[in-house]
Length: 274
Image (cartoon, rainbow, N blue to C red; front, side, top):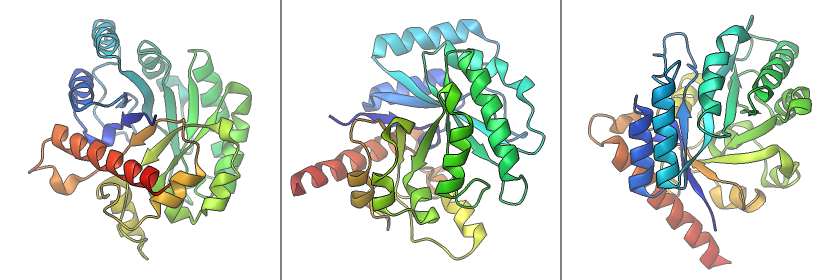
């Protein structure tokens, strides 16, 4: 049976306790949290340095049967400084054994060799906390082809690094279902599920779709059936559907509910079709 995880971006709320409540109330099996700030302007997570809050989160996770599958998000930039990561890794480890997610800076802002070197250091540091790190390739960012992403993951392989793929970015990178089917399954721990409009020609729209404006599964233009058929069926599907166009009219819990409902409907249709 497919398991579903509520990604942070689907229902972005500040409080991790509220995230746990939403995921539990809606009926998810897992959830993702943002603990490490992606950008310098991001507000720090309330979990950082707060062991009492971490303990309460763990208690509620245990009571609800939820687990945290992923923790966002390490942005590998030029001069990436690992010294600021220990607090976020410690907080993540107190919640179980989630996979950390790393992405790279914009294409042209950092070289491939530095991404590989910094990612290897990140994976080594995370392993000291009992955690693994997955690299997520994004088409408009450095490391944003499948070959580049696999080279980054290989650099962290001695420390259990993996690859996380997102349906939108699979499409934007031009990865075929046949290429997906050939991937080493052991690298894949979670898969991000969403739908999206057709691939745009301009960078600005591509970034907007990625960060702010995706579609519910089955309501966009992505060939989700082909992608899902090519990927392992025993990995959690992390529903990641940022929809800021609804931020002022639809509460995070309702967006999470719609994401889960449409995902289950899509999977039911695929199973019925054989």
